[in-house]
Image 1 (tube, rainbow, N blue to C red):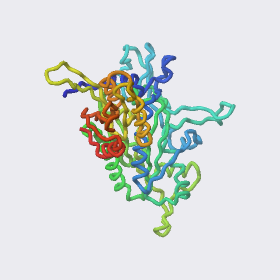
Image 2 (cartoon, rainbow, N blue to C red):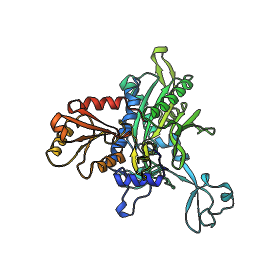
Image 3 (spheres, rainbow, N blue to C red):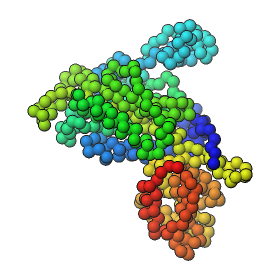
Image 4 (tube, rainbow, N blue to C red):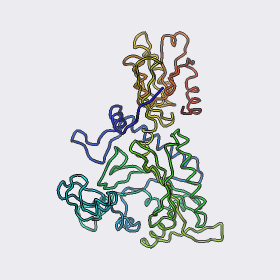
Length: 448
């Protein structure tokens, strides 16, 4: 079987058609840089988040969770450097009024002050802060200014001592968080890849200075293994090593994925040293040192190994990696393409669909009974409209790994047909064994 090329246009079309992602405020012309997640989109996003959360907290004894507030004291962002340094250099075209990031433009065009869109004259570069600013209280003055957080990490740093004291954590330990962040991106592009409102999955791991290199390599290995575990095509992933480091970093790698628009950042693993905790010590006046009671009350400010992944970027990656237009026609027959999403069953928005062969003869009622038996264990769907072939195709398009067909034999001998999404193979199993068989198939799943 052959496949056709994947494009971002095809991904966007599928997402709207099947309820993964919609343009925000679409009936008013849409809001740039903002997207809404539909019924299957939110299930997919939730499943990716749960898989990451399990990987970090359930499978690591020394990592706990946090949900910090979006609105924080403005001094937090002064300490982190965001107020002074979190900006992009921008230029505007005086003729067509388009705006460009100077650091991503062709440098010859920038030097000539020539607009890449219309050839008009460009303004001088100016800094544009990426944080969204708002006010708390009735008066909109400098004393009421707060920011929508541009990252989730700072909420972890300012709670670091609280978590040590309340949960008796000992270095090395980590704090995991999933939450919304906001950046006033001038150029939003490639669907949900770069947006103004997005979600991050971050884990900050606190280690003793001198042991940071060891833990840095450990977390690089762990994060790479996560994507392999959930069936991502590993040949589409690569490491990018930062040669030019941020002011706070000792070392930094990104995991990049080959999207339809090329390799782009998916997740970062960074050695942030003790910069963040040191800055918060200076700005808050609170001692951020860790007291190692197992080593003579030795005091030090921990180094931090950060793993930071975009949840919405992960969702786009899982969509692109799972997407296939597959020719399922027999040899010599006209081409017959089905669109299928090869999600790992633990990620798929719907795990199992129950399909009565027809509505009459009590098959619909029997199928609903079977669905009720499965709902406690799995996310299910029910579809009785159209031919069975069309219903299989609809489930393929949202990545449902298993379809259960209920027919007249089910009434006679209590067996049903399980149809497998990837291979399209069909087998008969007793109704009484459905739950255990599906659990077994999920546990042993390997993408072909």
